[in-house]
Structures are given as structure tokens and as C-alpha cells.
Image (cartoon, rainbow, N blue to C red; front, top):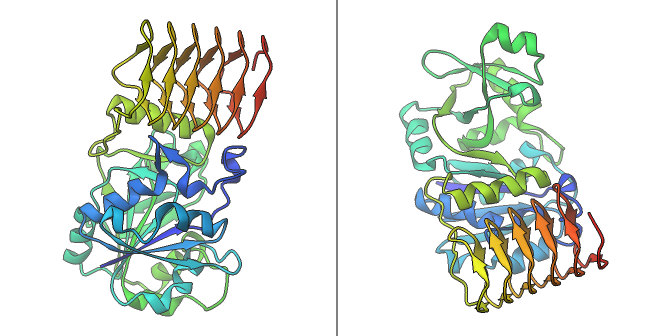
Length: 346
């Protein structure tokens, strides 16, 4: 089995964090985000992985390389124009020789991909779509399956009344397993969608189209700053099964500084006297000065936080300078190289 990761999006909802870095490699626990997906694929025995890119492809390739350090083989395709989800799959046709596991490049999940692949094979399915349950499905498209998990229909952005009437809460998790003959149903060189074009065609053609409902698994679309921050809180709390976060970088901690047991500090961090790091992730070379508190936050590499400053529940990009006696809180998101003046509040 091969894998195709759809990593061509510009990450507009994550701006300003993605002004200088493409969404697929924003750091999650100080590792490129796609590392999590690559690791999940490797655990499932899938090591032949293609990345379909579009926005800043050279930056992604430089960050991930050929995959050898992850124990996989990575190849890269650059979409000439946005092709859509199914269009990107079709664009990779010459590289896909067997059953393909397709993943959206912005989902963080601990769903067992080997289990999904086994269910696909046992059902002799042409296509399998992974579904996950959410508390509030109104912002998503619902998918209904039958008693034998065959896909029956799709309900896009349903109203509350319709949700209550159908009692559905299963949504598209952005993970698919597709047999090569599915490629024949997608036109070449067109922007084409899985959700709005290919999947309805599979239903009309009465193809063997199966749903796999993932139960009691973690799933999150990291496409907004709020969800990106939530992903870190979930990682540090151990809520995401099978994912570990490295907490023991080579950093300097002064006498009198406090760092709790769940925070993650990368190499080169410097924590000055009486500074406190609580439930937070700090990237390489972050400096936190005296009497400063960083709590429930994510700080990217190279940022310096001056003395007597408080950072709560916020995301701070690379190489920022936060002045002394400043306050950054309430879900603030600061892009790379932001300067916050002394005594300022965000």
C-alpha cells in the first residue's frame, strides 16, 4: 500500500503563523506537523509516501527531506495550480501503482491506519472513507452509513433540525483508502473534489463504498490558531494516544526558575531566575527572562521574552521580541518577528 498526503493548502486560516511557513510543517511539539502523519503511516507499515504540495513546496521538502530520518521514502509532487482533493490524487496517478491511503494534510489523529486498511480489505471495497464522531457536527458534512457500514449519503453543513432528526454525528475525517480503478473516474487536469464530485459519483455508480467509523479516537483539524493551540494542550495532557512529545531538550534553567513536568522545551532555551514555565511549548533558542510567566502557550524558535512579562494562552511566532512588564493573553497570535513594547498589552 502507498500513501498520498494532500499538503498543498496555503493555511490562510492559520495566518499570521503561516505567513512564512506552510501549514504542513508548522511545529507541533517542536516537530513539523507532518511528522505525526508520517509516523502514523509508518506504524501501519506504509513507507512509500507521496506529498502533494503547492504552497512553498521547497520549504516543505527542505524540512522533511527524503524521509530517511523517519524510516520512510518521501517523494514530492507540486501541483501547477490548485487541483482540489481528488484532482491532486489524479495528478499523482503516474506514481500510484497500488491501493492508496490518502490523508488531508491538516488533521491530527491517533486513528489506527492499519485497522482501517484491514477493514477495507475485508470488505473488498473500492473506496473506504474514515468517519469520526463530533459533538457539534453543524460545521461539517455528515456521512450516513448502513448496518454493514456501506456509505448511504452525505449531508453537507446540515441545519440543527436535520441533525436532530437524523441523529447523525459522523463526519468525514479526511482519511480515505482508494483502489487504483477509482482514478478512472476522475478527469485529468481539472480541479476536482472528493467530497462534492467523486464520492457522489461512487454512490451513483453503486461502487463498493465503505465507511469506517473510528470510535474513541482523537481527531482534530489544526487549521485555526485556536485548534493549533488546543492540539498542544492535548499533546501535553497525554490525551492523544500513541503520540509522545519530547520534553527534555538541552536547555539552561537558572536557580529559582520553575518548569512543570508537562512543558516541552527545545534545545538552546534559556530560562532565567524566578521565571515560570507552565503547560507550554518553547521552540529552539527561546529566552525567558527573570520574573516572567509563560502559561498554556506555544512560543516558536528564537523568541525573547523580557523580564516581568506574562504570557497566557497565546501563540508567539519565530524571532519575536516581547518587552518587559508586557502582557500577552486571551488567545493572542503574534506572527514572526513581532515586537511588543515595554508595558504593552495584547
